[in-house]
Length: 332
Image 1 (cartoon, rainbow, N blue to C red):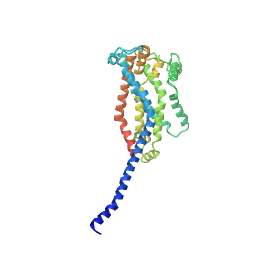
Image 2 (image 1 turned 90 degrees about the horizontal axis):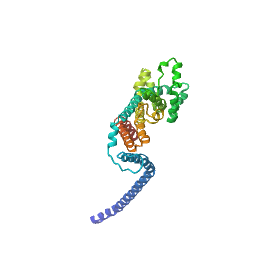
Image 3 (image 1 turned 45 degrees about the horizontal axis):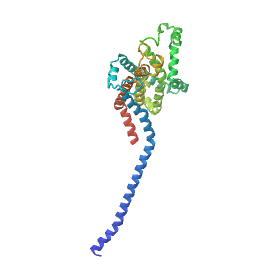
Image 4 (image 1 turned 135 degrees about the vertical axis):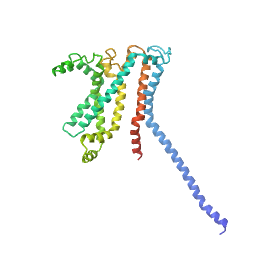
């Protein structure tokens, strides 16, 4: 066979292979295109309703509040009197609003200093195997399922002069502890904090219990075999593994402290003399009672900015490693 015939034979043998490869590549591209469009359609179908609700109930109200905040508006008639950032300047020059910010910060700090250690201690206690553990969990979590209005009204009746709390102290021989719990400007904020702790600690305890359930019991047994005391096991093993849950609890507690509204509004209406005013009660009072909707919108934007900045900073420095760990475990 000549050289030309051999080359022709070889080329004849390879041409069908090349054609088949090209055809297969085109089919693969069409399949990838169909798969891509199918994924986009599925994502649009699944995320579309949630995205519409998020835009309608979160993004749009924020934008409207920012728009209203640059006007001097009493809630009636069209928006005409543009005053720019005057509402924001007024807010930060109002001593009552500055006190409201301080009250929110005090409640947030007390949540970290008092609620967190107490919640961890109770969670560790009722996580043990003992008789009546289910009933104790029910008692701890029951206040959380009550509405804030019911809690506020009930405690207002109990804390009124001559009420249940006063009678309890008198019968216990501690009559000197009786105070005007909701009428004394020095203690009313701490009284509301106690009521808020009574209602909301149950959620934190259940959250911590869920975290404790995820810690393997073998780790406690290994620590005990190595000679660790129960306190050392808790401090060196349990608490570090409970760290992600604690950080989530701190985040929710801080946001809730900044947005606290229902209890002080119903129990004291922010009084007496603004001693229990929070940022949320302040903006509602200015908007509903004083008909200063433009100014109240500016206060609401300030409250949103505080919460948003805290969320970003906390995510950046506290929650990021938990999120990265979760993604790493999923990838692995």
